[in-house]
Length: 183
Picture 1 (cartoon, rainbow, N blue to C red):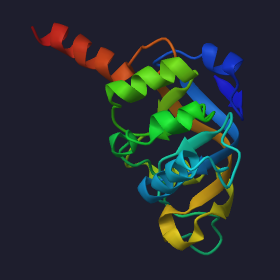
Picture 2 (cartoon, helix red, strand yellow; picture 1 turned 90 degrees about the vertical axis):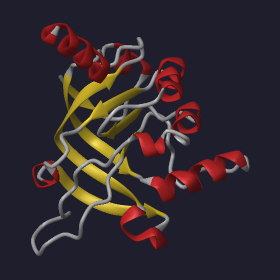
Picture 3 (cartoon, one colour; picture 1 turned 180 degrees about the vertical axis):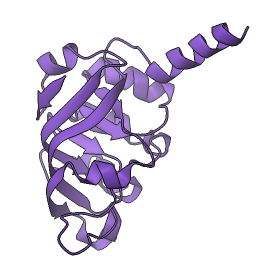
């Protein structure tokens, strides 16, 4: 399924765990330090340095670009580390998250409550994923280096729906199918 970003309630309602998706548009990068700052900013009642409503955040710390490239390797990082911050960002209007690995119960519940979707990207494929990134700009927290928030313009960026707004969990479903197959 091809999706032009940003995400809307209507677009996330059509997504189900296991769906292959290709994003075209803008996604933002953010990892631990940036998430901490964003949540602290929201807790103070202040505005974030970019409008998060309808946006997708990619948990990535890209490597520096080689000559002739817009970005270096850009593979996903482990998502569960961001679980303490994710519900607050979803409440502020974030609609999508890209990472790798599973999410905890609080995040899965917040995805349902705020109509957000967690997507997984293939770990270890950062060089291939980088080919779908056409432009990169730092938009916030430049002092964080690789953890600064970047605005990425992407084309046909491949992800898979892991957790949808209906409570489905692709990783958990896979584990259950495996248990049945080996017993």
